[in-house]
Every structure is written in C-alpha cells, then in structure tokens.
Image (cartoon, rainbow, N blue to C red; front, side):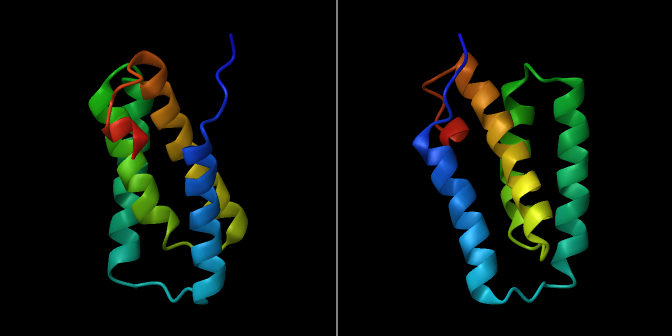
Length: 102
C-alpha cells in the first residue's frame, strides 16, 4: 500500500520554497559550506543505514539547514524532497516519532 504524503510534508516543502523566493536569499557564506557538508554526510549515513531512525532524523534536520541556504529553486525543491522522503520512511516504521514529524 502506497503511503500518501502528509500535509505537513507538503507545507514544509512549500514553506522552504516560499521563504527562499520571498527573502531574495542572501546566503551566509560561512555557514552554507558547512550546511552542505553536513547534508552530504547525512545523506551517505542514511543511504548506508536507511532503517536507522537517528540517520533519518539527522537527514531531515540537515536538509532544512541546507535547503534554506540554496538559491536555485530546483535544487531547493530537490533537497526538500530528500528530507521529506527520509522522514516519511521513519514515519512509516514509527508513526508516533516526534522527530519524524519535524
């Protein structure tokens, strides 16, 4: 049975896209490289251990940090979808996981 994307996930993605568009987005040059590195590291950890709740949570958190800093809308959306998918996989296993709803 296919899982439907929760409305919270859609709202989160929309919020990320809208905040980037509305702010004219000036990237913090000191933080952006660290956020990207943390995101890439979290992606690798999640790919290696997709059933681990901690790696899904970490990917969701780093996704938000990195997505809010990118200036390309397509990249922004792709990053947001990565975090949403990780959190959805966690929620599929544990629907009551508070960090999974982050």
